[in-house]
Length: 385
Image (tube, rainbow, N blue to C red; front, side):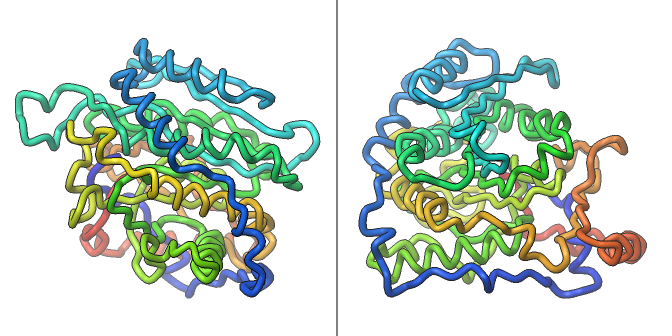
């Protein structure tokens, strides 16, 4: 996770209001059978966090990183597993993919988390320790733990699509990181492969004992609307999830999911950027050596894990593309790597996926209109995940 970033303009918002519909996705709030027998076990997920931190910092290319990948593969019996290795910023990075039902269906939901940990603790109170890598119990291990615990239950869900667990490497490296693993994946994704992905759900920093989640943007509005419906449904059935999930608040977070958005994939980032009791955004234990297992809660992991579990069971993130009247038409604009950590060249894919000629026209006009917008107006309360 990283600090401030002001690189993304929501172009459609410059000219027209959001035009997303989620009306066709309906959950029967009177029928709580779906959530009465949820399987996600927060205690087991918390044990995974403890194991991961016991390996030490999982920086790219380290022995701990390799050991974690091996452990992940050993725990995903029956899943189709692939790895991709690439070089970026002087590092050798390895993304890990595990897919359930890869051959039975031609559409998939991606559940993603980064498994690397920050290579420095630049916000630590001890200046002499700021160049040392962190254990990353929350920032790294918590997302991986949620995916691994979900992997035990997904095979029994009888889903009508495949599920790919995407463990990204190189998300949290360097002074101004660029979500390197997700970037490499997106740049090598064909248009056909991208179109087969129904949605991309990123899970990051979700173990804080004082869990505070809210919709984060940039992110697909329809996907967030449906996620909020799922949370409200769970809450009405006695899961009290809205104690930790405030749908009336929003945060700005740039994370691995922006590279999925760059390929036109409906994407959201489920993340808690206020790490520690009473912390403000990107403060508290974030990027310090206090990011340890004792700050992570089994209850928080279970809250998020069951939210994702319910989203899968209810097909909340299926068919989102067909529900959108006008796509989000978003683009990432290079605002220098020194400031943002997200470097995108002219050859990179834009986050512009218009669903019609009208969308393309709107995008062109928006590019002209937004080019004169004062950048400083976007500088407040911005953050990178």
